[in-house]
Amino acid sequence: TPPSAARPTAVTSTSSITSIISTVERLRGTFDRGVTKPTAWRIRQLKALRALLIDNTSDIEQALLTDLKKNPAEAQLTEIGFVIAEIDHTLKHLRQWLRPKRVSTPLLIAPSSAHVVKEPLGVVLVIAPWNYPVQLLLVPIIGALAAGNAVAAKPSELAPATSAVFARLFARYFDSNAVALIEGGVDETTQLLAERFDHIFYTGNGRVGRIVMQAAVANLTPVTLELGGKSPVYVDDTVDLRVVAHRIAWGKFMNAGQTCVAPDYLLTTPAIAAKLGALLVDTIAEFYGSDPVSSDSYGRIVNDRQFERLVGLLEGETVVTGGDSDARTRYIAPTVLSGVSRDAPIMSEEIFGPILPIVTVDSLSDAIDFINAGDKPLALYVFSESKTTRRRFTTQTSSGALAFGVPAAHLLVQSLPFGGVGQSGMGSYHGERSLAVFSHEKAVLSKILKPDTFNLVYPPFTQKKDAF
Ligand code: NAD
Image (cartoon, rainbow, N blue to C red):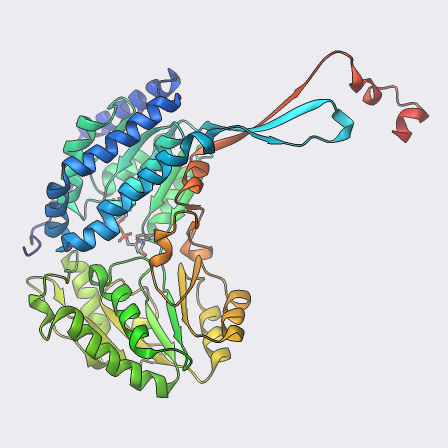
């Protein structure tokens, strides 16, 4: 199914503004009444979300085909099944995660006991992007509900079919007084951001990330910003390049390159660049056939603006494979570029599409210096069997994640924090960490009144007390 050409643009009417205000008020009222606090309620909502996904798998898959021509098998791995795995992990551990954690107390206040108790924040806002419109909308919501919050969720208007499916299903499955989905674009998001929330969880680009953070200032609302950037790949000569080509092509061309943790560009020596370039050509043919335009496993660019931006980035570059495109269906072939200059336009912004530039370096130090000269990446991928090389990347670079031997798969490890650093974002989530994002860790101290062992600290401060 080719993605639909026409994209509806959201129009904000006075009535939608009024309804946003009243929706947030309704959520606030629900939270204030304590509805969302019982663990049993939280578990019910998580199970309802699970049922939503299972009962409506084919509608969701169809929406992803319409929005991004995302293959259903890929949708299972990276969207629907991914979210179900996160729900199951959360359901399995939630009661244990919520248990107050006892901590030791100093002698000065003995006898006493101290605990860290997680409490929900209140009403939280989740703003999601279009590229993984299921996962990036729902995984934050899992954390927000597990922590006992009411949730306002804003899917991306740029994945309209997926947005519409959830708009229809949320009210049917969730407690609609506690979980609201607000469809819309910039106007609706702007209106939402004018409301007071207790946490804002935003996934998308850094420009809007700044708008979100600015809006949060007014109410001192904490934010999590899951942003993007250029995620480099470094390859040396200690590894099996055929496997490396498979791993890189998988991570890069999945979702037609529109993945925040996709390998953005490749750094390697000229000798490896030539070999790896040839192996990538073979791998792409193996994955998507000799004519990827007719492959069911290959996606499309989300809209005309992104399509034109990506085609523009190809200008003047040397194509190893791919490079062709079709504006009508927003197809861009899986493309590898060689001999790309470090100051080429394609190296100055996150690519976010199926184009892989190969940039050559003289040495490991050259690669590390180049990476460190740019913004801190969301992810950094290293293919090397050398312990020294691995150690140098671990200690001499900074990135949201560092993965050896495989791109993007760190997201599948629920116990690893997922998030950026510096320009690639702030805060992290997944698994227990999602619960922490949407909870306040309350310090609870308890000390008995009798006998009053605390009298040693009361004034007046005699010499004896000073000594204590
Ligand atoms: P997008 O255009 O869908 O925007 C994301 C959200 O911001 C949408 O809900 C949209 O309505 C809202 N928005 C857009 N303009 C706004 C404005 N002016 N004011 C208020 N809200 C506004 O998605 P995108 O930003 O194009 O997503 C792609 C980017 O997101 C890439 O940079 C990618 O790397 C990053 N990303 C990061 C992660 C992550 O987990 N770290 C995941 C996916 C994507």
